[in-house]
Amino acid sequence: MSHWSQGRISFVKSVYKTANLPDDDLPEIAFAGRSNVGKSSLINTLVNRRNLVKVSARPGKTQALNFFLAGDRLYLVDLPGYGYAKVPRKLQNDWQGLISSYLTGRLALCCVVVIVDIRHAAKTLDLELLSWLRTIGVAYLVVYTKIDKLKRNQQLRQAALLDAGLGIRPEQRLLFSAKSGEGREKLISKLDHFLA
Ligand SMILES: Nc1nc2c(ncn2[C@@H]2O[C@H](COP(=O)(O)OP(=O)(O)OP(=O)(O)O)[C@@H](O)[C@H]2O)c(=O)[nH]1
Ligand SMILES: [Mg+2]
Image (cartoon, rainbow, N blue to C red):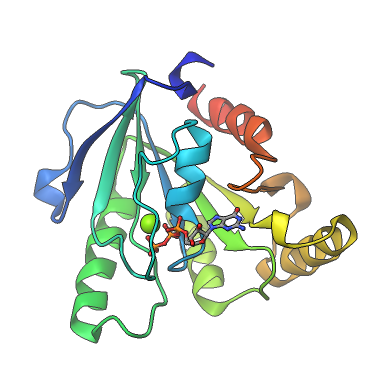
């Protein structure tokens, strides 16, 4: 699809308070997950741009809602990661306030892509995010990322464990690698489906 291809994506702005959210009513897809899970890398792979979104050397780097315009027809929103203990509590609370008011009140939001490291067990914060998205009625898609770190049979075993731990069905998630690009086409087709 043209809006996912190289050269048609640009950084628009970093939003630190809801008053500064874009007001042009374009559809939005947000990317959420634990700190350092690979949110920014996934967006780069999705749009085929190696360095569009800064990938962290240290976790907890993305601190604002970062808006990227794709093909003049939708926004990709890179959310700050959650669960990074070394971020001061006060700052964590500020971010949570911003993220939760964005997710709850945003009419333009079509889908939240919830990104989980395929190597890890289901974590409380991921479960809380999913159950909260269900409660507020926001559509989501789960991505198990960094699959290049595991052999195929381990990927399948971990995916089944995570499905059970997160309480989701296999149709609600897909396997992905920002490194190899595996899963990119599937992700694009699912996202197009949410946008349609
Ligand atoms: N092998 C491998 N490494 C990955 C993959 N995705 C991300 N990484 C690495 O994981 C680290 C974190 O990636 P980011 O994309 O910055 O993660 P993030 O979720 O945006 O991090 P914060 O913004 O700090 O929350 C980087 O060192 C990436 O190179 C992947 O699919 N495979
Ligand atoms: Mg990031």
